[in-house]
Image (cartoon, rainbow, N blue to C red; front, side):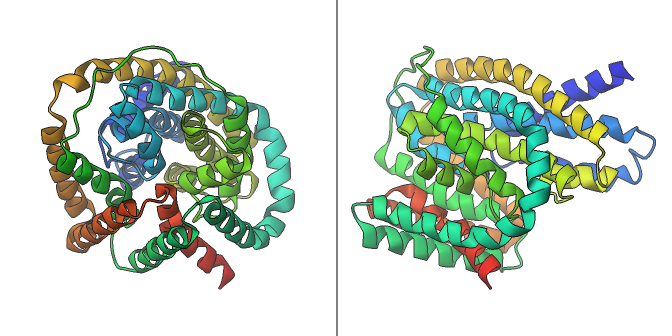
Length: 394
């Protein structure tokens, strides 16, 4: 049995690496594939092996998916904010450092998750109902604080409102995987088009280990990430915004915070599945579909898989980042950006259909317009924050 579990773990790491590297391919797609086959092809396989596979793939994905976000400007639905400081560092020859910062954040987060797992189980079961009613007002306060921090407050409010209305419309359209065209347009293709227009040249990348300040980013991520256990509409992007409000950091600290938040949100989704029987990520939904409500023994197995996967993924991500750093300067970035933009169009049309492509175009134009207004692009997260608030207030 141990050999089979280890094989499932390493296969999951391999698949998580591939999904992390391919723009637009989320681990949720693998989950949907597993669920569709579980009643036929996988019926004779021990569900524990499938659990190990999906957990290891999901955790690996949270490490590796920052590479295309930062080097190529192609965000996943969990890494859209990494483009903002990450791409700026890339243009300064510090793309390697940008990814490594997220990598250290993710590794530290996996250790924090293990330490907080069982206290979190006790806490979640006791305060779930209370916090669920309180969170919309917390999100409103956070939006107010984000606007207050801007020099152009009226413009920042306008961007939040504009993208919030766009998010409301898109999330109520009959579009498959609506977040893919919405977030890719606002945060990915809008920046890619800017790169094509300005003919950005990526300089030689410096491969050196950064000085990392972990305390403040990890504090913010640790406080904000469990909030995703309560609200299904709250993802790692919003949790990162909340974490940065709680513990203000510079752009490098924000990348550490993003890495930590991405891994913590995934890890806490497994904990919430055990504590309050609520699945908050695609990976947790797959586990719930395969196994129902999980036992304490299964939770311990999940935590062990998370820790092992995190350590292995840390070194895989470093090796891949070195490879990308050495190759990126030899590539015509304008041509590469054009190819990626075309790939994203094809991918979105394949996964979200014709209406998804329309959403992608509208979101891209909205993103370009919002960027031109000269406020922080994190304000465009109104596309998710405002629909979440409205959902739970009304």
